[in-house]
Length: 433
Image (tube, rainbow, N blue to C red):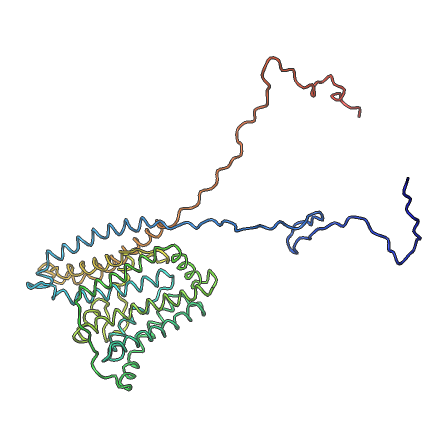
């Protein structure tokens, strides 16, 4: 029995004609893609999971440790020379009490060099750090006062104000960091007289209070611990990557993300706080402010007449330590070793006496010594920066065949071929044209 469908009247509006043609499903390409649109392309495949990103190359820090080992030998040699000439350097009664003021000044120099190296590694070198150290020493009634804890609070507040000024100049106005640092340094130098007047008006006229001095050796060991701890943190790859991001944000070659700006604020405030501590500790652990000013001012080449004077000591220590002028890279023990080596070298140099014809020979050539050490530090930091950079990624080896193509020749006596290319076949004859 055959089923015969009933006839449907044409033009019935109640039952529209069914369109049984296949609807093609395609997704047009995004506008501006530049590729031709494939009408038969379906939905793009969705990737499930995470795509593995290549790990960034790490710095080669082994060269930094090799240089620090060499620097350790040089420092030991310089200290041995000081030991041999101790009578001419410290007098006949050479003892730890005589060296104690020198160790206090050396601790201040180490703290200041650590702060300056921190700003240099973040790509935001701040030349206001030595000026801020002197400001704390020059106005002890405010930044130390009768209660050193209150004075320490004023020191931190001044560091916060300078941090805001420096970050606005560098991150917001995009002023070069070295120029912003010089402007901040001149601002700090100009604030000495107003701060003395403010301290007098507020009633801070008492002599600065002092804490019981644990000894210059313990102060120096504390400064060494701070410097080494900062160097160890600088070895972490994530910290170094953040330093690079901050440097790019300051120089304008990268974006000003929130993390970079907050890192710049933290690094600038910490470096200024270390510079303030370099002036605070000698005052609070000394008998009078004059003695502490002599201990620190003698190393930093600051005086009350020339409030702001460029001193090569901090730059020599930071560069000889292997801190890169291009940011990111630095050492662990290098700052401590460079500070001790410089101190010992200066002690030996000042104890030398010139010939009878020119007794001031070595004193007159001191500037040449400073210039030579500064240039040596620049060469050392340049070499360590280049050696410490990651290796360039190796190019993948090509798999293309570059030799001569050899035709296929079947082997064997029983091989008769397939007959496809026999000239006697009908297909092989040339077609009439």
